[in-house]
Length: 178
Length: 175
Image 1: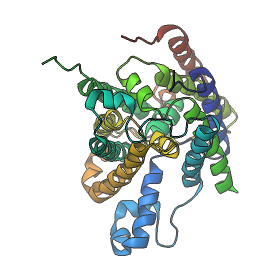
Image 2: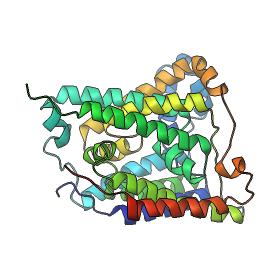
Image 3: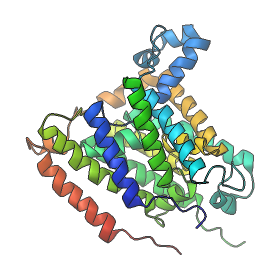
């Protein structure tokens, strides 16, 4: 199939597991969502310093003197670069017919680029709002958290899949033939 | 040095996840529609390997553990919100970064939405404090709950169950 992964889930899961173990041995478990706050803090400290300095939450992650760009932020930058290199090397870069529309999405909703981009944006807002409230996302809570047998991470994983499955079913319910 | 290490580990993680199909909208929605088990197997396989590895390191006090606090009500609400975003965007906070690097424009909008969502959370953070303090049991793990000193005794059977699931139980079902 055109979109089938280069690595099987067995190989990818094994390698990813070994990398998370390595990260935990050397520095700390792997997580992504905190870095969105660090990035927000960087942007706001450079554009609206008064607002940034008065915000309690942003100040936990980056200050005027120290933006908080450290190991974790470089790791996410690395993920971006690694994915780009891998997709180029395996000829998967810009492979879609339309870069903004997944084929599966347009088969259900039509060729509405604006609608898809709006959905993608709102989806991103919900993802990060939820991840910050929980204190982690798929990486920090589900992969690293469950691997440390953290009770809250099991709860988070169950809640994600319950609401994700329900939402996906609602979006992709078969249209009644009118 | 630590920065370069982060970059190197990140590049390897990004490449493996991309090649494993984690940044594919079709694969993620396939998982949530319970038709394509690739992503679920990938996640469970990763957890199976990592759990044993981390708790083996922990035996020699070599793991830099980072246990997140368990505040039940706040985490359930957060997971429900996250799940809607997961299904609508077809990405998670990490995979939209990977997909952006592949030139997928919708994933770039998910990253931008994510930055907006994190900023919104920063603004309303004081209002969220009760959700974090309510039903907060602190940094508990299955090992601490069951009073097991060496977590490896839970990690090994737990990983075995996950391996059984991915190799024997979970099957794709296409219509």
